[in-house]
Length: 324
Image 1 (cartoon, helix red, strand yellow):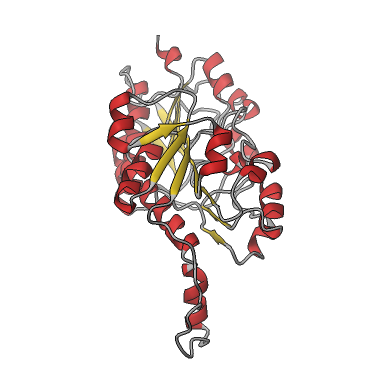
Image 2 (image 1 turned 135 degrees about the horizontal axis):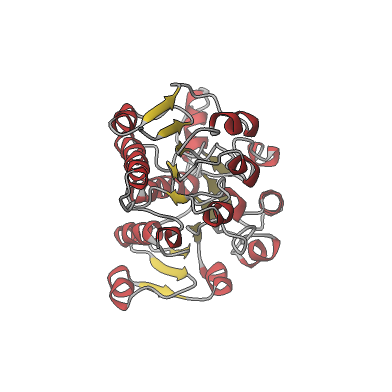
């Protein structure tokens, strides 16, 4: 008998085709999000699930899925999944790292430039018919070339962002739990410093850490007070890494110059204070929103799900200890 797999929400068609070769697929092509109660009902007979960041795979939900063997997440982050409970129950959790590195790094740079050069405000100014003449100080922003970029986290995406900084002649600092290989530091001309030093010296602080207990509100009141008044904060990592209330206060009081955010603490809700500020660029979590990338993410999740259910080793296990 073929294993049964639940696909929680709309995915690219290739992923469904991959699953259907080996599994009975429970899939409704909808953008609606299942709540915990519906997930519990739909997972009762599932051997695997292909899920997204919007799906609350909590301990209670997993308790209602006695047959579940694999959770394949279409994302790098997995804080919507109780990985500890899954691991205790020998359920393999997989994600989709690597393929979205370059797209997310591109988006980070788009945010950096848009924030520094006030591009959304400039476009709105033009569209509103307010542009009547050239003025010497019209919509002036901040320099990017030759400034200091501080990267908090220096994994795949952080390094990809650093690589792009070379074209802008920037000084690159990074703060990370462990040092990068010497050849990587040399290639990227990146210098490892403590977080406090990075915050004090950087003109742009860009966040690239996973969401863990120790990184939740990593950037709060104390850290924002260390930053330069002319500095910008960028977050394309995970929303709860930043204390949004503290960020709003810092922006309102002029402690920092601006922010560019693609992720938020309580997505899709955005702190109302952020919506009112003119020096913030806000995006709806589109860091990897490139058609080819998203399609590949769906296919990777489907392939890893099939691998576990057919006795093969998945390529991207989050909890490899379950595999032995």
